[in-house]
Structure formats: C-alpha cells, structure tokens
Length: 166
Image (cartoon, rainbow, N blue to C red; front, side, top):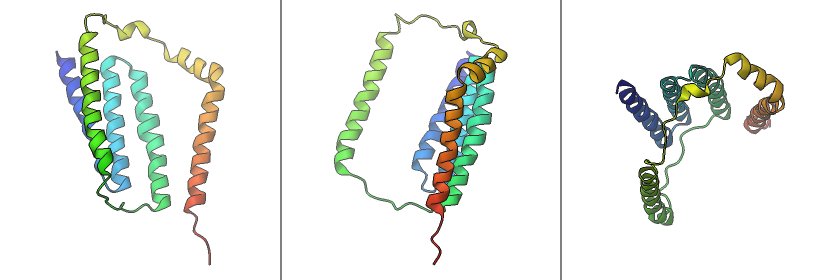
C-alpha cells in the first residue's frame, strides 16, 4: 500500500512537471520543469527496484542532457515566445479526439485487466557488469553514433546562434 501511495505522489509530480513544461513561456523554465519530470521518473524507477536505471536517469538525462538543453537555450538567446490564440480547427478536433483517446485507453486497460498477469521486476534483474559489457561490446556502434549526433546538434546550435559580423 505504501508503494502505491508513493507511486501516485511521484506520478502526480511527473504529470504536473510535464504540464508545467508545456505551459511555460520561457524556455529555461521549461527546461527546469523537464528536470523535475526526469527526477520523478527516476524515483518511479526506484520504486520498481531498478536502482541502476534510476541512477542513469538522473546522471544522463537530468544531468548531462538537460545541461546541454540549457546551454543551447542560452546560446540561442531565446526570449519569450509570442502568445497566439491558437487554431480553432485544432481545438475543435483536438479536444474531442483527446477525450476519445483517453476513454479508449481506459476501456482497453479495464477490459484486459483480467488477462494481465502479475509481473515481477526482480525476475529481469541484470547485473551492472553485464549491462556495461553489453553496452560497450555489442552496442558500441549505436552508443557512439548517439554521442556523435549530440555533438552535431551542439555544433548546429553554435552555427545558428553565431551572429554575422558587419
């Protein structure tokens, strides 16, 4: 019961941070809201018993990736965005579509509840050493390609932010 209460608390924090991320007008505040989301997701991973994934979530996403986001935002000197009224067609179709999608998901979960079995996260335990070996042997190329893509994104932000000299 205690785990359920903690899950609900951290899930509410996660959803509130995600909504705050979407509703913020300043990009730096949005990035800080995204850090809250990443931190609450790490706590949800801790509740599942995945300590390593929680640590990686905090170190990689809330640490390194968010530092890159804030660096690019500061580099681009992004100010406040202009507020628009929005598209009436998107509002007329989007809100009923979102409600229908939510009802469909709730119906699918409640209908399949009897077919779902219990899943024990502890059955899927992999030692950190084996995870590291798999990451740096079998998946070395995708890991390095990802780091090169992040480097290219940073270089692209620098080129876009560079001001022309007159």
